[in-house]
Image 1 (cartoon, one colour):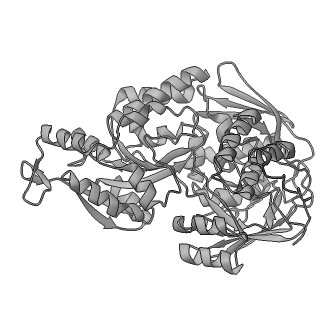
Image 2 (cartoon, rainbow, N blue to C red; image 1 turned 90 degrees about the horizontal axis):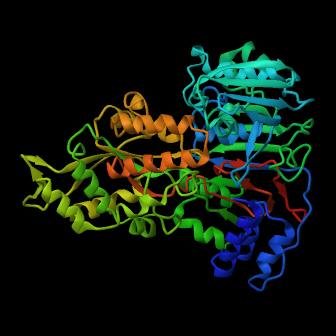
Image 3 (tube, one colour; image 1 turned 180 degrees about the vertical axis):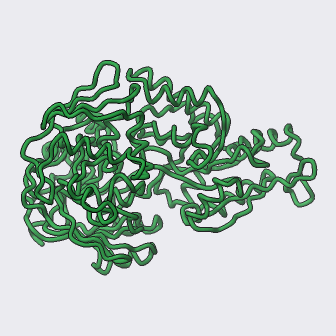
Length: 557
């Protein structure tokens, strides 16, 4: 999306009157619009332009996270909360702007080969790691080789590298990354902190210690990690190589950044309101409106690209091994009711394996499963599932009971889902457990279903979630095996042509939903944030990860 389309989209929102003046101005700034464009948006509904305060130097911000990172070595961690921290410590070769375009990072320019098997990067001069060692092509090679090294036991980062072969050091400022076959998502992968460039010197000195003592080239340097309490970072005074995705160059405005861990949502909200945290992730959905109406706070409501919140249905375990059952569960789910009552209207219904902001999203999935309980009953009747004495259906002596490994992620929705499915004769057996236990239970086919959402700015994430190679020991929890689907997923990774990729992923989405491998619920709002309005320049990127480089205190504070 370019600047003009950003303006058009926000203009429609401005005229609708759904956003406050302050929130409209914030969204326009986050979309990269100029101050004159922001003024025009405000004027479109008869309001004057807000005064643009100059950024002030100094101060700190405390960010309340809902989890503690597992580690801060990009090669090792697959955890989104680690990415929130690492984005400040490390730089990436390229950055992805909010319009989806790629901008220079540690690489000033890049050139893919025609067949998509090589990417040549021209690197910035004068960049240094926090330990004083120079950034160069050797560091790029080391980082990628470190990720694929079997001793690193890298999972997610190595998947982002796809069919990586090697990195050729042409000279200090030129690195050529080779792949065994074409790999279309590589620039997107290279813009994530999971492929951020690490200090070879620091990693080689002590791999184990590096997990909690990261060294990058970013605008913040690591200070300390106090387990179960906080991670603190301080300004890198030498930073002068910011990407053009940001609004300024040179060192960060803030002197200090602290991440505190509040795994309990009410405690996290209380910390914000008490001033113990200045910004929190995932405020309670039922509090969004109250916080938005309070002049002391701003709220960013964002819905993540990638996999929306869904339930995976195990196709190898009865009764969800029956296509009619899986399809009936989809038809019997009133997604708008779920959003309105379970999510307080914060998000929107989802209809497929990709959220609508993800590249190559196909709107065709939106018509496949309208809310239609009568259709659900018909499918179950035709499949031989007859209503029992208490209304729950039976077939060949088997009761139509679907077991759900329920975590906090799905808690607000399970009662509504139970009631809706019960109306068509499906019993939901809720088994409450931790996230780790739920992942193990669905992986071992001990339950029929559990929830998942996955932030991704490229549809290649569908390979992790639906390719049969990941049915055992991976995240392909539907355990569906279809050589044609596997072939399409592989083609989606290797196809360079944009139109052809779009066609491939449209077919993939259709196959997943026609076979009802999942039950989509709603757009994932887990990276929404609330923060004190005295902080300006708070942004979230294309994936809705937090950007704090431009963040500063209001000069009047």
